Length: 421
Image 1 (cartoon, rainbow, N blue to C red):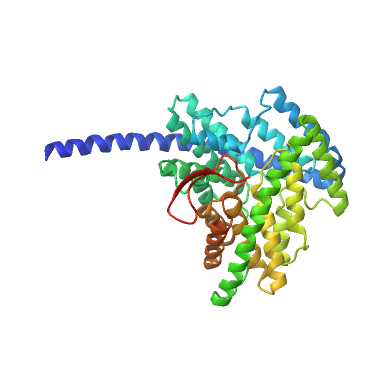
Image 2 (image 1 turned 45 degrees about the horizontal axis):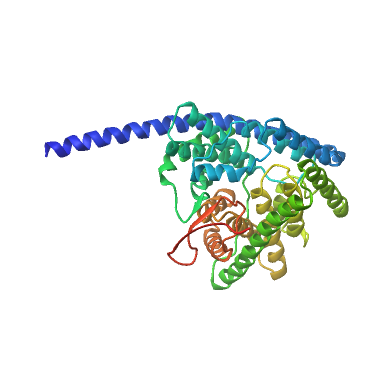
């Protein structure tokens, strides 16, 4: 009896010490990454506003691409694999250089200043991951603890840039290895995400929230309609992933010099912009999302054009991310579907966003939480059906080539394979 009590005290003391360590470093990570994320948010707002006031800046996009390539060459990071390196570092012991943080920070701002079509989560995950890794090295954490610090930083940055702390806390644990969750990082990721979110709020950055208004009653008919939309969104997500990976391969195959790729990619985006007659597909695509929800209308080819613009931009070596563009693609496709079938275009917009996001990231729990945080809980059954079907029907495709599918999506089978390209 006495020995059992002694063992309990000893084990509990060890657990308390470990918990205290992670709480402390999660707070530190949340503060540091939250402040960097806040600065990045203000930078994004500033360059976007500047580009919208001076539309001619898009003609400097090739020069911006040359500057990005030059920066990476100057800091000896020409083989940068971006978010894939962050995911690989969590799976193994690859080094994440701290220089990745300022590089992705500056290069993403350059991309958006000159009208490239890209998101911002690439910056979020790389900023957070590199800072988290640097903090772990500073305090001499072992390799396993380093992995948790990287996830902690990713959650903090995702929360700071997207103002979705619930989804941010889970995303970094879910996106690395599909079929398993790194629950050892749960407490640090939750705390870091909440701290970073609190910092952005205190600094005056308002969270993005959408009011869908009155939603149709959930029933068999509406469930079938949403089910059809979900399957179509899964197909769209596969096409988006294929387009992104194929475009990058084509750029590298025909333009082996990175400077030529960046200049040519910038020129292609300029030609595409001139062809459509406006810059609506530049930047993240949030304007398209807001229009779909506010007006319930969208141009029929908006989802396809956003995919093409994003692939042309990122494949050439410009920096940013694919997640917000994927949300934009989902919103535009969902809104189009709702108008074609005469069923609540606004709800279909929200469902399309969640379904396509799930299809390209293979992260169903995060997708569901993002829907709750952006749109509220009222549409829960619709989001649940959409995300479940999209996860299953999107196969083994994904945005990140370093992402591993540990267990099959269709049966309880260990497969441990990379996502399709």
